[in-house]
Length: 164
Image (cartoon, rainbow, N blue to C red; front, side, top):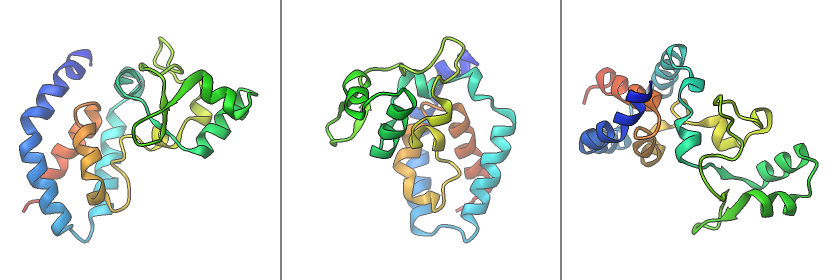
């Protein structure tokens, strides 16, 4: 698995031009059944991919924290919201709450998340390959294929399945 993770940025870079062209076409003319196709590809990939073997998303990137996420997680820690923000988060250039540093503070050495039950929405939805109107998030997906082996495999399967 680690070899696959290490090779992912190069693989994604090699496919970037092809993927960009594919997503441009997908945005212009998404297939009628795109949401169903994506759900099927997503489900199939995650039957064979175990995120606990990888956790590359938690090791290399940080999620965006919504106000609801911040309140929920602070409550989980029995902290005041501002105390949680001060201890764990910072405001980025887009004025969003993000982690102060990566890897994620809440990721254990065993790749388990210590706040899994109350984790941010961005974490719950990652890698976003089962989202409705998938074609609208191609910019996120182009980034995620370099981070997440499952996202990479789903995009490759999608290109094989949807011919333009």
